[in-house]
Image 1: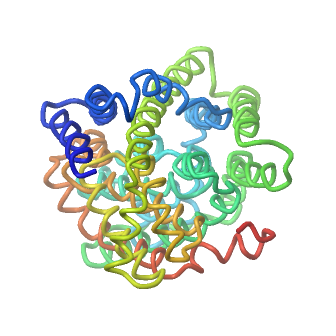
Image 2: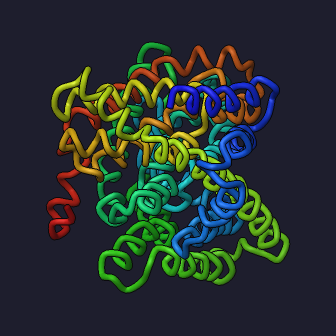
Length: 432
């Protein structure tokens, strides 16, 4: 088994060193293993595995959710969500910073994607913050950190993927992400308040109640989207893919007839963006899924369970060890890759320690998503720096307090199961 793992991971690291994308490195390492050991992994079985890894009706929900988010952006929803956040939070100390977090929290319930959140909210909030005197690096760092809410608040694409690859019920996972997402938002707002007080960031005048009501009413149809998802899934009225299709129709109706911001050009751009993002996610699912399948076939899951069991006792220590592993992997790998590989490989260790799969799934989503704001490959760092026209080094420096509070919330998710399990436990029948 040592030789098998050396060949598999050696091929992966070698291809990464040569500059291959992560999905191609994983797929290439799996193909190399099949060529060297055709008796263990026949090449035909490997090719079938690349296709069968996505041969599930549930994966259709991914392009639907992504398209719904893109259509909402094209229809002008992001500007309305930003306006809602500003009228309710703008008069707090560091008002625009607080509104940035609030807008990301609202948009997280629409897109399910951190990159989509950062692109949509950042396009509006970063220029506004810069005009109000906020440093460009701070505006970029805050937007990147708040975009972490996207994959945690339902509907969450990472949680959907975890449900599909581990056969964990989706509704408890979605509900399990609500409290951690709110904790992240509160922690980021507290950090903004501290930074605003220390650095003298401005606050806007308090908005009249009439204006708050008018702006909130205008954005209400968009704000109801997460509730529509949860109620449809909770009642068994539709599968995740069917709910995704309904959300696309809902987004079109809002964009065309309610907000009147969606035209033929915007619709085409939304289709193109959703297709590109879906392809990016699904090719990683396919290649990483085959890589993880070989690891599981080699007994990697049981080996990891024995290793973790040897250094950790009980659920808390097990989750702490897994949390450290997730943060380390997040420094080099994108969240989808970490989730697809670690989900099946770590599940035996999780079950052996008595950890609820829903707790593990939400922790996995939170921990892997933090990697989006940690150097050297954090995608949101470079997106924010580009939007703010700020040096990457400045953005990373401004990110440090936010990474600290994100890590503290992640620690609470790891060590306190009630953070994840209390809400689904209260609202759902037993799922274990």
